[in-house]
Length: 431
Ligand code: SF4
Image: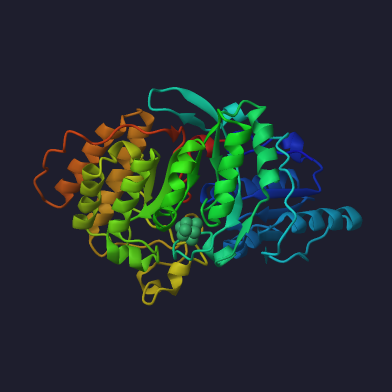
């Protein structure tokens, strides 16, 4: 078996030659876009191979993937199905059909991930500390799925409110093998680290006991930060440097439509609670939705400035446009479908046009500017000031001066994380 990470490695023709099975993992929107670009070439290089696409984004895009020659599509707890597919192909040779369920949420016996075929950990995103120090970061998964049902979330159409816990010993063994490879920080990839608060806390304690010098970050929703505020000091004491939280909006009406189960006031409360505990909060946003107004966008910027969170938000977060993939629970929102255009396979989603063209124009300009800021490594504070000016100009308003104190830089990963990211040019160049 050979493993290739197409976000870092070239699609190697020699590897595909004679392959009986090519299985592509699509855990994120970016990976799915890369897979769609790669599939035609894979089919040319390995015409005899059975093509399988698995991961969170596979079932949602099943029809599209099958139209590109993918024979097996798997989502949810995929490992038993992958094993069954391999055995079936070994026993019977070439097979066109799929016998395994497209989505399985059956409880599985988690195994230690085999990372031996992957590029060195040092080639992946690093932890960057406020002083500029960089540390190698590993990745671990303490749970999968989510017990919540936020309408825009890609986890929901597959897991539908179910989450599964990975045994503590398995997670620790996975961390151990990455620490041996140089990891000094662990980024937990759980959709929400406190879906099972007892498990999350046990994990943090065990990590700290075994590797006292290793820090970590996790994703925790605003509601959980408030409900489990008593746990925050211990998470910090166990090495938690920052928490990513999908705040999405500061407008209560938009938050209700997304079924986020938090309000704008809750966001402020979570900022205060994490600060009190000494944990940096890295909020993420869906800055542009069909319900966003220019005034609402300015209100988001004002809130970030007044909460001194400007250094905590990568500028790309201020450009993100709501993505509506196939199967999204947003499509169940009464009247929402009528706001959308036809499904666009290139976008892997349903495009929408804002009723106020100034909002779409601003979103495009912010997106273009953010791409330039990233290329030129413009500091977050300067990027924010430029977006602040653009937003006020778009609304025909005077641009007021920003407050002096916009907050301090926080620890972060060298690649901003956002699940609906478009692939970079470098990633697409692999093929
Ligand atoms: S956005 Fe977060 S909390 Fe909501 S369903 Fe998705 S993973 Fe769960």
